[in-house]
Amino acid sequence: MAKKEEPVAAELMLEISQLIEGGVYSNVANIIHNKNEFIFDFAIVLPGKNAARVQSRIITSPVHAKQLMLALQNNISKYEQSFGEIKVDAIQPVLKTAETVH
Image (cartoon, rainbow, N blue to C red):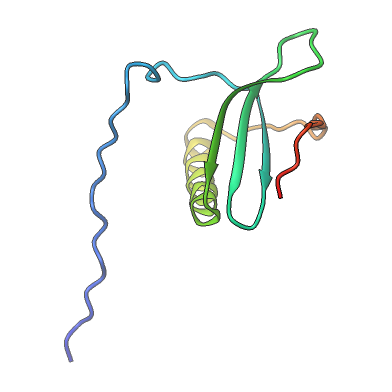
């Protein structure tokens, strides 16, 4: 019987525009979703402020959001194997958003 061949993942080369290659810093994120998409708002909270200014918004499909979650889990695991456990405070700030996604 012939052995079933597994599909081979194509190598994907990412190109980064000079406009965004420096990246954007974020120290807080908010995630909202509906049936068709996940919306990730990456924001920054400055000391002494009680508002977070959104720096970047990513809108993606539920499938891609789950792939992102799995990739993050994998990378965090590798990071912690190399550098030790990432400590997370038990208390997380509550974000109040003015918008609702339907």
